[in-house]
Length: 182
Image (cartoon, rainbow, N blue to C red; front, side, top):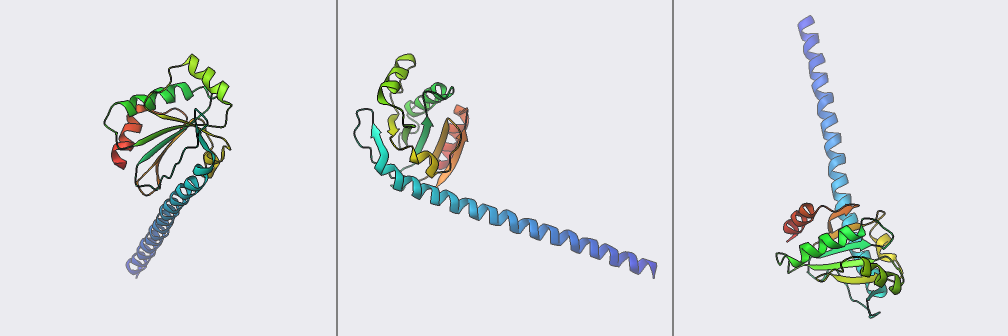
């Protein structure tokens, strides 16, 4: 009889462990699905906002639709963010290597006056292979739920966010993310 009781306890314990795994699996799956939906929604929001507030260094409107079937890397930066100079250097190095010629590289300044940006570029090496753009309303940054500076976001060909880095950007990590997205 004791042996039968022990078996029932063991079965109950196994059942409880199974229930825990099923519930945990459900939550992990739900989180992943929601994350994918959030990334798609962020890409759409980015596209909708982006076309109304982006200008190049000459003040001309810049069209941006991350759903245009082109992988797009967007780096948000500002003259007041200490890591921005290093970020601009890293993305310029990656963009100029030729390996990623299919990718559109944008460096989006967060609504700073043009004279301040020009003065900043007099103190650092200005990127030559990256589109320098200003978001005149600073709406893009919040439209994709960004909160750290600098921040890099990679959009796939469908306009979904597939990679994000906040703060320091490691060149090898950026290269790996871009290779994986292509």
